[in-house]
Amino acid sequence: MNLPPGSKVYADSAYTDYTVDYDLEQTSQISLKVMRKKNSKRQDLPWDQYIKQHTRHDIETVFSSITCVFPKSIHGMTFKGFLLNITCKT
Image (cartoon, rainbow, N blue to C red; front, top):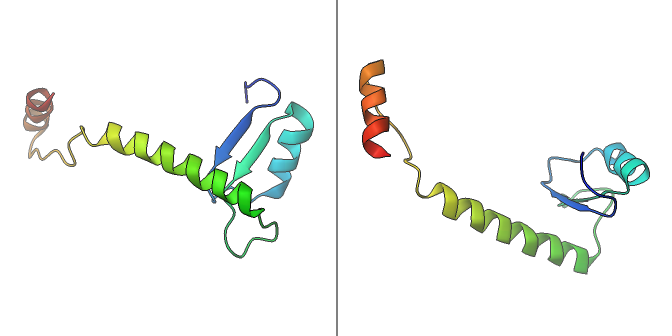
C-alpha cells in the first residue's frame, strides 16, 4: 500500500487473515482495523468496536448517497437499444 506510516485502514470482516494484519504493521507501520466477526479469536475492545462501527456507518452512508443517483437496471434488447438507454438516462 502506498500510504504514509501511521495510517489506519478500516476493512470489512472478510479480512480475517491475521498474518496480513501483522505484516502490514511490521513492514509499513500501517494498522489494519478490521471489523471482527463475533466468533473471532481476536475480539476487539468495546471502544474499538464502537469506533469501527461508527466509521463504517459513515462510509456506507456516503456510498449509499453516491449510488442512489445511478439507475438500478438498464434494460435493452439489442446493443443499440442498450446504448440508447444509457445516453437517455445520463
